[in-house]
Image: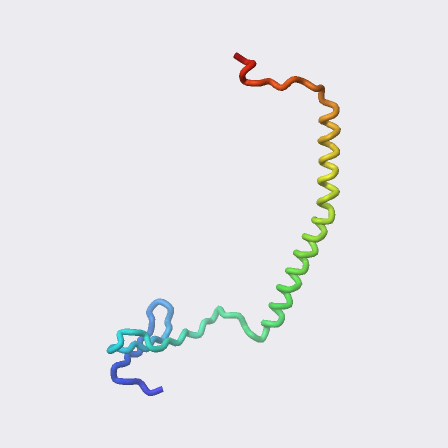
Length: 100
């Protein structure tokens, strides 16, 4: 693309992006990001997506199993608390007013 005389091409010292600035407008007209070495390889993108799907499925199955046993655990805790409540002697509760 042909540059106008009022356009300046700059390289960002921070990220290395190429910026084209129009002096008359005082704005960035276009920019181009630099090529990064740490970006993921698209050849292995399908493999990465498949691994993530398998991980999500495993977490979901674990959640389903814990929910299945949750009701049993809650009912056991309730029964135990009920037994303890039946074994305790019935006493009159202490009030702050009675302590004076």
